[in-house]
Image (cartoon, rainbow, N blue to C red; front, side, top):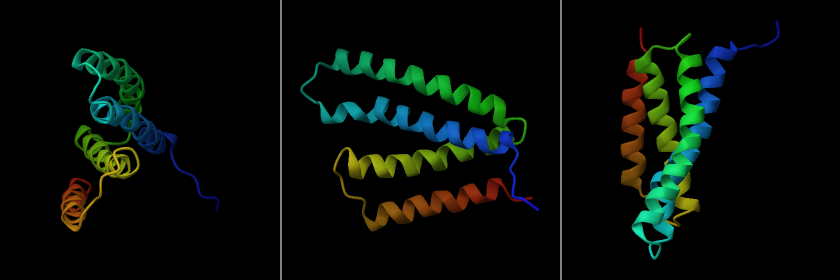
Length: 117
């Protein structure tokens, strides 16, 4: 039997991954450009966040066919941590330490309970 997944289960995860890339840049990308005026950072972030919403809203609409709202939020938070970890290392050139890894794992463990039973 060929492996297949319901698009309503997969597309929200794909869209939430993409939306989180935009949101992470909107919220934290300006930290690399501290000499830019704050108003410029706010307006640029707001413009980037528009694209995040264009992806997140459909992700949640489609995903709610399969997942509860609490499950969608949990998926989004776990994706946010993963995206942010990569962003911190590759964009901001910050190190992730063992305590970050432990904290992220505890959050992921907590998220697993949302999908139980």
